[in-house]
Length: 234
Image (cartoon, rainbow, N blue to C red; front, side):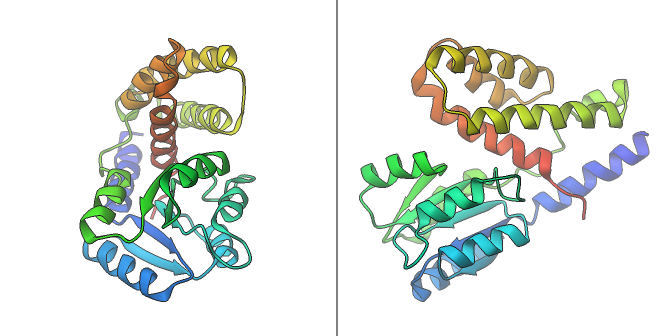
């Protein structure tokens, strides 16, 4: 069992060294510039020219991160994000950042409602783009639960991680009153800490204690954890 575990963790490390990004924009120059900047920083970048193409690309393969323009003909960025978030497709939990010249206040609020996780303003520079996408780059470290495998076995820990992932997905999808959110957050904070997801545990503990300002950070931490758990073998 330890041998198999080591192989899986090495696969996760290798995958995390090759983060992938989908750049969605109806302006070819914006796509080209963003792709060049991201590629130079070690990302494997793909492009989609509109919302419909973005949804198709997101159904075809998993990405580490998606940059989503908002104002596009046909399916706009908000609708495309909602479509990607629907169901259990490979990018249902992938971080999606609004990539737009729409004023931040409007973009952030509407984007959050659609399921987006942040905002990159246009026009952008290499510095501002990299500052926005780098935090979403996986660290390449083993799964936080790796230390438990030698005690419980890979199959049992895999099952616990799967249930934990489902808890996070459910928590991100539901719109519930503050009291119910705090109760849910309390459960997530406990199990995430036991499984080694310290960032998730701290953020969701703050939500469980009534700190509504911690909610955005809790959502981001959850999405990062989901992406790590979902990392497929090469």
